[in-house]
Amino acid sequence: MKKSISVILLMAAILNLLTGCTVQNQSEQKHKSSEHNQSKKEETAIDINKLSSLHEISISEVSLSDKSKFFDLEGNPIDMREISLKIGEYYIIDDCSITISEVILSPIQISANYKVLKDQYVEFANIASYSSVENDNIQMKNILQRIIGFNTILPISHNLSQIQFIPSSDIVITIYFYPICYKVDAINYSFYTLKGAHQFDGLYCDGIYEIRIVE
Image (cartoon, rainbow, N blue to C red; front, side, top):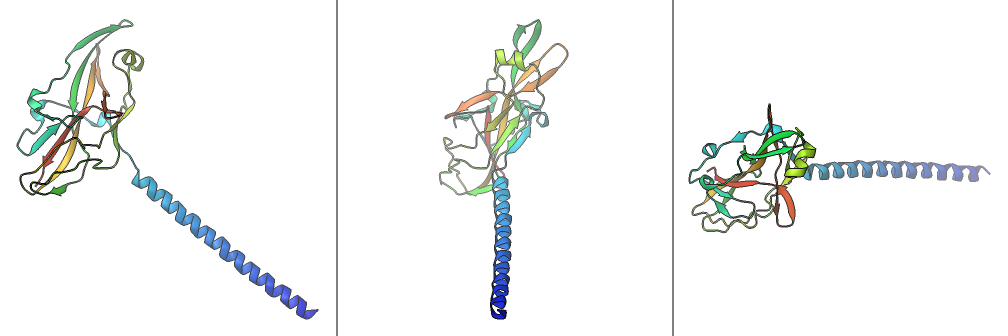
């Protein structure tokens, strides 16, 4: 009888030990899973640029030196001095008078600095993580929806696969994006709102890419 009790107590102790190990392993797995999920969230974090943090710039403020090349959303090279923007289109809707123009806003850096080699074709497809521009000063939404459409947030496309760039020497470059947005002028105030444009199969923030030589 005593021997049976001893065996039962020994088995209970072993079972308790195994249960403790299982709980600890589950706890460790949950912790690791939590860390993995957090890491995954950080990897896919979106860099959101508030529209209110940007400001309107003129063509004269854009660097037009030999150290910069400019491209549209389709990857076509453009001369910033010849760019054409809509100016002062006048509308009267619901007894509201407004003028809408296209403007260029201050640049957003969308890549880190990286080195490219002489006479080697540079591939720009999906150069960086996700970023976007958010309209954080929403006004006249219903009216603008009827005229030009309205977007609260638009992604910046990082697919520059159509751009053809072959450096003539070993250089270090970085890439900037200049959003093209609408400026709405009412009687007593003005504000900016997002302008969408199609690239490939998606709708993105309209704008201009700059490949800038930094070294």
